[in-house]
Amino acid sequence: EEMSGSDRREIELGIGEECVPEGLHICHIFNDDDERNETLSKFIGKGVDSDEKVAVLMESIPRDELLEVLEDAGVDTQEAPKHQVARAMDDYCPDAKFAPHTMLERFQAHYRLAIQEGYVGARAVGDMSWALCEEADTELMDLALYECHLNSANSETPCTTICSYDARKFDGGTIMDMLSVHPYTIVRGQLMRNPLFIEPGQFLEELKLRVSAA
Image 1 (tube, rainbow, N blue to C red):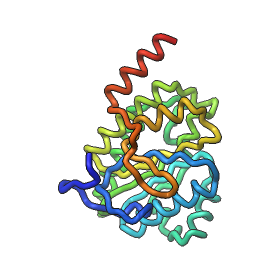
Image 2: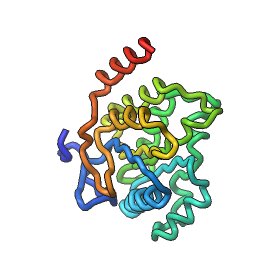
Image 3: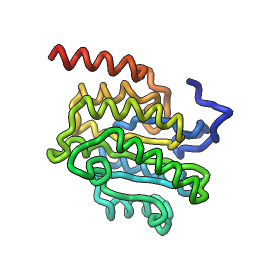
């Protein structure tokens, strides 16, 4: 899949100079808070400036602190009430149990609502640290299933999405697995096509074999 597409709007991510088709599914693995904050501020700020509806589901930083970070970076936080800035755990696990398909429907509904409200498109950030919360009770298979299916969901309703993984919290094996299901990744502040990407169907088959053999 090339970074072009006549059937989609070309957008700026705020990350790098290149324009890309809306609806990309991007993995951001970060190692420190400054790196996380800079990438999110650029991505969120560009979304607000571009008249896209933005959803920010964070776990590793409280909402008020995130709004301060965005404000310091020049993002118009007065616009925040029109968007969604919330704790990730509350959205991913509303009943204390992660339901992948329900969350996929939420992302698609976010895009549809954006269009209904007159926005030109939508983008979202999902801080995946919620998956490590004891109350989330989440299996790797559920997380992988969600990430795999988000690729096809974004092709139907092109909500440009960054999934953030804190390399200080997730083990190396999980990081590699999650990286494998994202077609794009952010490396040193630049978007790149992910050379480790595995087609979702193939990845899930390999994961099932691994789980059954364990």
